[in-house]
Length: 173
Image 1 (cartoon, one colour):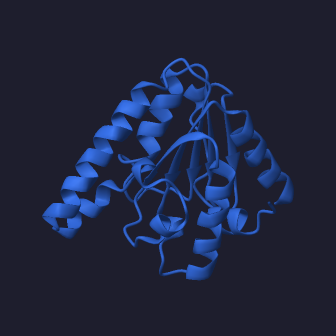
Image 2 (cartoon, helix red, strand yellow; image 1 turned 90 degrees about the vertical axis):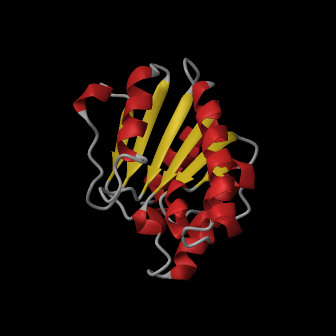
Image 3 (cartoon, one colour; image 1 turned 90 degrees about the horizontal axis):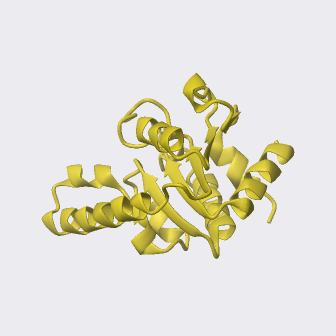
């Protein structure tokens, strides 16, 4: 596991831009302390990088990790029905889409952490498409069961068969 962490950290360091997707493995109903530690490590690794984080988790723990608030989008929080919060997320989504447009033909690392098939249209499928069209992009997919990469990415990715929370939470800084 240590070697896999080092590989991910080195890819983050080498990337010009980093797009992070956080999925259901980070849900707060599992060991919350490990999730918080994993988020803090991610925040540390992204320090000084041009990044954006999209998450399907609606528990709010990600917002406590020290990441830039204007670089986080949670599209599923719209289901909460809070009109003011929904307005914030729409502008966050617009910022995300604008940022994403600026990644084309640039060295982009797409890091997918614990994303399964609950809402694949939010992170999993769009991330694959981004890497497919941006020939300078690569995808690192970390999941304990659904780590496989599509053949269309033609060697521009790394699949890691690990629990994403455990992998990050145990990472040395």
